[in-house]
Image (cartoon, rainbow, N blue to C red; front, side):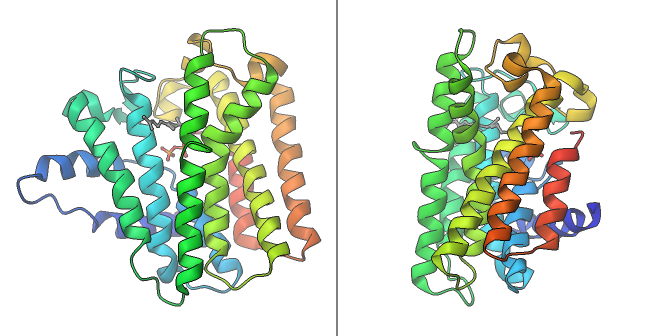
Length: 291
Ligand code: GRG
């Protein structure tokens, strides 16, 4: 099970390592970008893009630019999320955060550059993908990462942190801050293939369910795992009064909810006859992960 993710991770890491050669007057900026990008991330998002495309017979090497683009967006969000004006974290991916090493201004720019370069990368010609489907990938990434997706979720998270909030707020935050980008991975992977609307809808629904389950398990790990295990400060969400599922329903119920939502996603795929061993392998890792 682990081997599929490991194989994707190796291919993605090799691709990412070639993207930003730290030369020229802006070598320090590229160093800051590479520092976070090449740190030990799980690479679950790019693996999901690859797994979805491979489900429909698309070879991995053709998918790598799109898979890497999503990882660039994810990495920018982590750098910005750790800044003193946001979560003010000093540990990420098992190492000091970007602003601790490069200073706040450079960390902000490294995030900005990763965000911009993600779209630069996704707009390059993609072998075997007609322009219309490539445009759909770009639109999907923009909307899932933007105001109506990840950034919008982060804004509500910040507004509600430390306050009362409701279970409805938790659902909104999780769906937007985390699930939308994971949903985009499955949707983008699907755009590598010529699929009908029903299959696209099922993929989208499956991706959303995976994303929700991912954040539910993240909430659980914040309570149950150690800082060493996570490579980031454990218990911080609770300490800061973040709105999380365990705060409202407890750890066990949150785990159960994650399993239920995954089952809902599986059902959506089954209804349109999509069976995928790679997606099944990644989905199991999302629910069973310990970091
Ligand atoms: C636009 C100013 C600005 C900031 C964006 C949206 C955002 C800030 C931050 C959201 C980042 C965040 C912490 C989302 C929660 C999702 C999550 C659990 C991220 C960690 O993902 P993993 O566990 O990390 O996949 P690795 O390091 O393994 O890639």
